[in-house]
Length: 482
Image 1 (tube, rainbow, N blue to C red):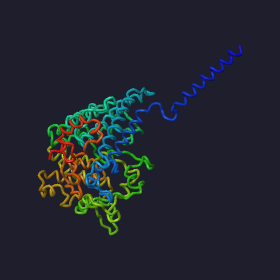
Image 2 (spheres, one colour):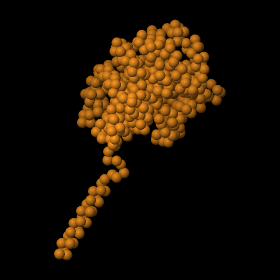
Image 3 (spheres, rainbow, N blue to C red):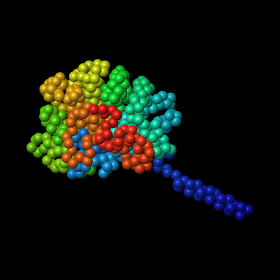
Image 4 (cartoon, helix red, strand yellow):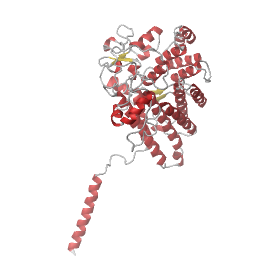
């Protein structure tokens, strides 16, 4: 009897020990499943960071848009895309850290049973907002590279996705965006605090989606004018931005790692890598543009001086960005009212039915930019002969004069938004970018495809490179006709 008791005790002890050992393999600190809302927040931040960042390992477009110039290492301002593998980083962030997380967020939210009928009723809005950001991210990829993986892009079982035609995909994205707009129910909320852009306000997301549709429609105007016209007019009828209160800006925090990336680049890094670029400073000086003091600091003699493009620029001898630009909590803008008004000005110049004339929207755009940057004397500025829409239009010798008038002022208003400014420069061909001193290519019309795609997905990469006319920085994309 005693032996049986001992065996029983040993068996219990062994079972207990085995259970304890199994528990040691469990991660009790991390959740077993990540809520869809948390995945959405992470994807949103990664998207905003990638659009805003100034780090030369991540995003060079503020250099290519000639807003800033490097002080010591000038490779990137001379259009070097390979030394730091910038195209690989951009591709990886948008596919892996944005689109894949958005895709997973949608799956989790769809399969989640929420605790109340009221929370359950928010699902459609959440899924529609995720879809809007999906469209935004894919659009940026197409605008950057051309043909991209799309229909097979997020299949984890397919590591060698085919590339889809850029124009066809872009139009399909606009259809997806229209559906998302129609699916939004403005009588209900959505993500609330998990949404770091609009705090879950669905009407704001509807305006954002319509404004994004406007921007995407305009991008196609030189390649398919009829499609662009119908897209733009449909977007306007859905209700686009009407004031700076509509701006889409990611809300950053004051503590690292949740600060605006520019604060990390320029303040926390302790580095002095960038100064104002000569191209923008010279134009603002020539126009007497009052926003210059909102963008840059004067040098010791009270003047504004920009660094020559592609050459080393002594930090103390040139203007630097203002404290506001490098502030930790400055919102990360991905689309704003000034841009929308410039898009409407372009639409009106193309005779699309958007309400108002090109001049009226042009004036509203500049006023919106001045307001956003807390700059004064906007009426005086608009009255200047070198700014007044009709006067500058009549003096232009450009093939398409309105492209010069709108292009120059739109570029000035897009300051600190490198990717969108670069897209605008390529679409409107204004302003004229200064030659880079030691350029390794012509002015970049696109990012080249990532090296990882060339080495691991060569068949599909080669087909895509051939389809777009060559995997070169100078290759013009389907929408960049002139």
